[in-house]
Amino acid sequence: MIPAIADETPAGLDPITSQAYAWITRFMAGDMTPADIDAMKAWYRQSVEHRKAYAEARHVWQSLGPIASESRHGVSAGAVVPVVSRSAVLPSRRMFIGGAMAAAAASAAYVAIRPPLDLWPSYSELMADFRTGAGERRQLVLAGNVGLDLNTRTSIAVRDASPVVSQIEVLAGEAAITTGGAPLPFTVLAADGRASADNAVFNLRCDGRQVSITCLQGRLKVERNGSSVVLTDSQQVSYGDGGMETVANIDAESVTAWQRGVLTFDATPVARVIAEINRYRPGHIILMNDEIGKRLLNARLRVNETDKIIVQIVHIFGAKSRALPGGVVLLT
Image (cartoon, rainbow, N blue to C red; front, side, top):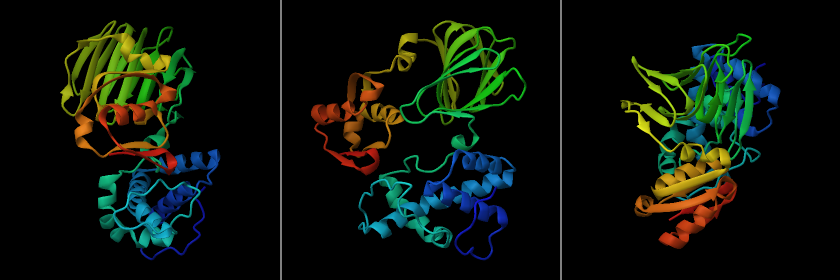
């Protein structure tokens, strides 16, 4: 099913590009049912051309959205704009497409102050079979007795259509995976690497192209670009654009603290603390003071009490806090 196009379509758009704009506009209007989301996923997966058109349309919306919101709500140039809900008045398709070039240039300063805050459907949202939102956890058992414990903002895709699932991909986020009892070796893909085990418990975190894998129990093999290592209890390896790092012995309790609903920071730069907290709360904390971002913070809190970090940063480092709609908080 392709969404209906309400506004006049500008000349020169091919059908796939036009459909991509229609999907994005409808998604942002907030009126899509679960069946509509499934239809959008199916459309996206049809071909490379569909995926490319979607990516381009999403980029246009990212460029235009802030400008459209400012013009409709009377915000002065240079002001920090609160998050606009999907139910708010949205740009028309004509404005969406026709204003793209001007908006891309005009929004550069806006993005430098407040980058996109997960308002737009991402690659992982479209390709995931299982997904958790901010602050949400989900436990699953796949065919073949593989257990998954998904942390906040995690997207998982099943890459094996056989009755006994033997391969998944972590598109984003973090999961604790138990393969004990699986009849076949189980493989988890992440970025451009993979972890394989037939009887192990391990934690995998994927932040873009940076991946960290920790063996909690048993034995697993990690491979990437021709390199491979074997991990056993309480060993961890990370890889990213800089290659695969050296295997390290770690404190497994700290890696799995999220499963107990706890976040612990030990002499951690404030900027990193905020980046981690933003995974767990709706909206976004934006730190606009680089000096405070470099300061070190010790903290321990539960994942449902993340806003306590804001109070600590204000009291300890003298930051100023300003709350905006949509869960956005500015720290200056």
